Length: 124
Image 1 (cartoon, rainbow, N blue to C red):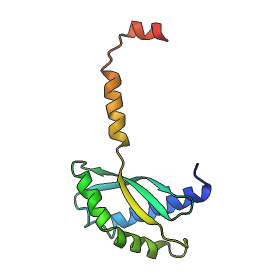
Image 2 (cartoon, rainbow, N blue to C red; image 1 turned 90 degrees about the horizontal axis):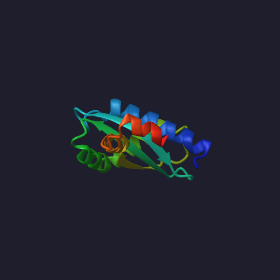
Image 3 (cartoon, one colour; image 1 turned 60 degrees about the vertical axis):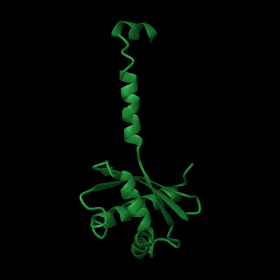
Image 4 (cartoon, one colour; image 1 turned 30 degrees about the vertical axis):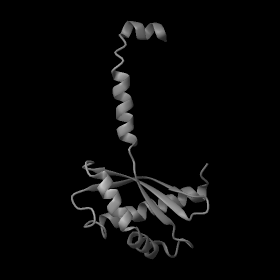
């Protein structure tokens, strides 16, 4: 269960790193729309896990590897932005957020069952 402190710190990191993607890091991921969907922070605020989605999605693994290689520079930029708001600048870990893709698979699986409407009402 996340504390209020963790949620506020995660929101701050999400806002600042998103802003960095728009301004300073736009050349790092050219022709790609990058969205930070979720940020999870450990209770001691030392590690932040950032879940990202990309459009187009075809090179997501390559984009994540590029970000992982540039993590020290991204963390440094984050530190400069939040130095007056945070005592510790967390280690950043980047992951692909595939929630939407998994939800699509589940929807397709449910749609493939083809339950006729009459049977559906009987089951309820």
